[in-house]
Length: 127
Length: 305
Image (tube, rainbow over all chains, first blue to last red):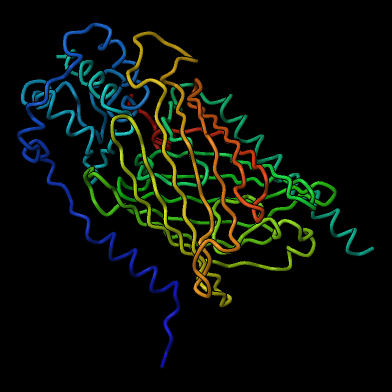
């Protein structure tokens, strides 16, 4: 009996796991659960939160979305109608927590809720 | 005599490599404009992996060092240079170059590692699994990137010239579990390692949790404000092997850990880690400096007029 090398089995396990990823259709807004959509931004209307959010944005988001959030070749503008009008603060919070990995958008859950809400304050201030 | 001459030669080469590597990162950190790097908001873990993946297109360059002094042996410093690149949102790859210097012996290049991490679930859950696979080709390694099997202080008593003869080609698999709740990150790793030469599977674990000192960011610029620091606790150790699973004759370490997101994209971390039994090295001092380059390849593209 031929004994399969352990590394081959490991490679197959990892490869199969990677293959089960679902690709995103880009319509992330439709995936947001109602309870997340209705979340209220505790920092809304606070000028300090907008300023703090801008700092966080420049640190983590500007390289993909542009320093003015105008978007880049591959990444969308955050001044769009979808972000500014259609998406609620709760929608954006859900997106930042979960990411959209199929489209290259990572999860930012490591920032923690307060900083995520502060970024949303800044983004929403751009309309 | 011949061996001594060879040792001096190897020692010189290894030391040069290590020095060159440190110089590259420090020069890069100083020379690159601040907008190239960003505050990485890393967790302050040295052994434990969290569920976080590198952002697609970003390159994280990190130097990790561990200093120890085993009873009855020479003090050592083990170092890694790590290049971590986000290929996809769900796939991160890392390449390491390893080296070590042992007092009264030599400074040597000890090998390389290549690892890949895959995140099978796209959204955040209460517990987020990540699959990890690594191949390493090392000898006389003292960087202690993980502890498995019956790894212990006796391994560090073998002189470098002898340890280098034992070439280890190994695969390592990990199940990484991570959770984020109320600002805390809690991560657990289950490790299985196999020497391709035919040794039994060896097992280990790592566990860590941490939290920023302050969750909300300040409105103004700051360098030493609490939000720039993350503190936590890390614990790891061996769990024996397929011939004897358990804690018997394994080394175990526990210690506090902290990092600081410095300006210009540098993150500095430090942790004293204490051996919990006589099989462990009494104290390990770990130190790291990392630098994240955002959207690496965008810096090589010609900008639009």
